[in-house]
Length: 215
Image (cartoon, rainbow, N blue to C red):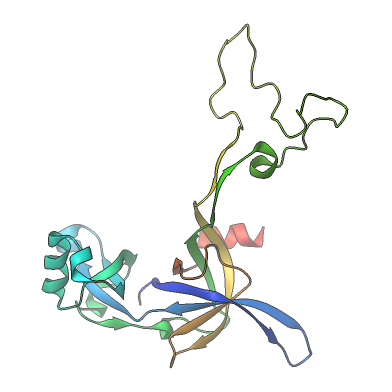
């Protein structure tokens, strides 16, 4: 069985359990994905399956990738990702849907966080700011950033203003709340990184990430 699937974040919603408890959840359109290539131990040294998601216009795909998709017998796709799987279980052109996951299963969800542009140190690093009595319009400024004797430079990794967001984020050990196989929807309990329409990767939780989530 393949370890994961690609999907698109549709948004968030709310469900009520029988006891009246409200559950906040994220709706993800998971697939359908198509097998583009399978890798075997004999040829590649390991077993994996490469899958693609979301149809693309041919003019927006490079010629090498057009040939790659043509060889697999599938239409050009926007996103291609490789997952661990027994190569013998799949063939190029096979369709992978949301039914590879079950309700209550623990998964990791990978997405790209929302980009927030240039931000100061208070928003970007949670600095508390300088005293209101300091004067000189210094209230939200970072203050001193290094010594002017030794080493007479700014240390690498110094927290300063800069670009915030638009980073790869992994939510570990989240629960699959519901699976709608007819509409290819996977509903994840809680929030998922990224904006509406953003690409997400849903993977079965590895042992290491399960231990991190439990901690």
